[in-house]
Image (cartoon, rainbow, N blue to C red; front, top):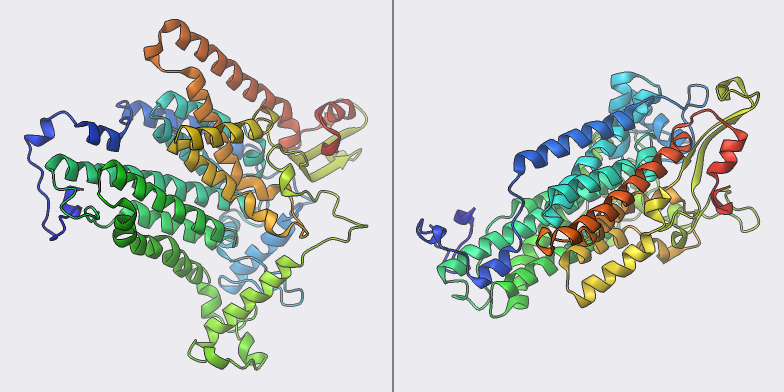
Length: 525
């Protein structure tokens, strides 16, 4: 690590072994913050055990439900396109309807599952389920890093397992669970980069040459920042909403760097960040995602018959000042512009709206869930013990968590602004990057499943609050015991709430009376 940290004259650093034994100075302690827990083995055991439990829950009866063996709800768009990819060598056709309206990466994952298990529920849902399982592991590790507590990491793991949105989206052949996974992975990499930068600066502080330049030292190549760009790029290959995370995480990375240089005592931290860090950050978090996005169209590039592959030639479009750009790249640009136009104008008549449409101000509390599948009074719905049974799957955020979203946001804003708690600020950035952009065009069709990437950050925000309620062990047995009781009761409430919603999340056969009991709000109907 230290070999990457360089003096202004680019001399390699070789820390004195004797210095390494000295206690950290106040400035070093400020830079490094609270150390990571020392129970690394237990931390990984907790992560693995909870992830396995989550995998069992996510994978049970994964092939159900289907619509007489065919996809349900919006699976009907992406699952057949994934099957086309297997047939066509990696790209979709669908020429007649021009419904290829998202980048190909997630559909390629779905196609891989269909290749492994066939054109059935298990096939088209296996990789979404795998993404949901990875989210569990990532959330545990991120919470542990944020709180420096294995216990709170475990609590975050339980909460994320019990979230209805992440559970059902992991069991659908749709795209949004992949966005949530890559966005969360990018966030994990960015947090690791923050810690690594501070460790590197601590070396310069300890050796007394952090201010040999008024801009501070160069930090060397930052693999975790590079990995952040890779993850955002993969998200970009799923849906274009990744562009908002490019902006949000780019600004968060700069803020982390300025704060680190200021904590290290750099004379001009803002200018130092601009001169030392911004250009590499633009390469890692902007350029790399664009290159990965273009690479996700590898099959499109290799084909001559993919949708709009030769658009500019067929339409005989005058390139004008863009004649220097290859025709294939211009075709992809025009294809992208056409798809963007489709999304911007995807509206429903005001006198005939989509029955399950919702707007972003309803998402934080999950006020308008979505019905994915419904069977009543048919042999397929039988099994409840009565003459008329219901089987349904509905996208519902577990109320014990989602109904606390607004208090969580309020407390996070207060902690970020008035207590300069970077942990809350970072979680806020991830959460709001998934919510605020949808207010830019509120006339277009929107649905609750767009809120999927917000769910892990809701869990992380609640975990930070639970950590404060739990309190430090140094506050005494009584205070710690009371906090532990409150946290345990809350976690138990979340688990019970998830168990209550289980029939609606998995399509179990229930009576009409139980169906009515599950409908807690009028807006759920």
